[in-house]
Length: 158
Image (cartoon, rainbow, N blue to C red; front, side, top):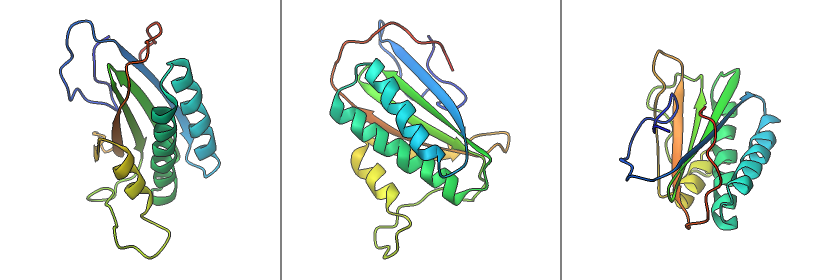
């Protein structure tokens, strides 16, 4: 399966034999959808036999990114894509927002807003955002490294 998709551009070269697994889902941009995103992520990463620490970190990151998409954009839906490439897990959440500059860390914020990205920053090896293209919104992504658990069979592309 070739790396890269509408949500996750090809950012890294794969060595021969590296297996790529992908799973994506869309949910309405409602606060109740955050719990659904956590459940779907947890179930998929359990099926992929990802270690519990990496799975729990990924579930928290998905929760924060979906929450941001729901709270801070005028989206009607959010799309989440999980991509496991070798020892990397990449999480991408696309919303329909069009805010200039994208999400930013607020290290000195006294209010409740803005702290979720501090968690994403602390728990991921890298994260960022970019325009989705065709004026269709923004993609916020995070990447985790994890142990070399055994990979199950291949998944269908998103």
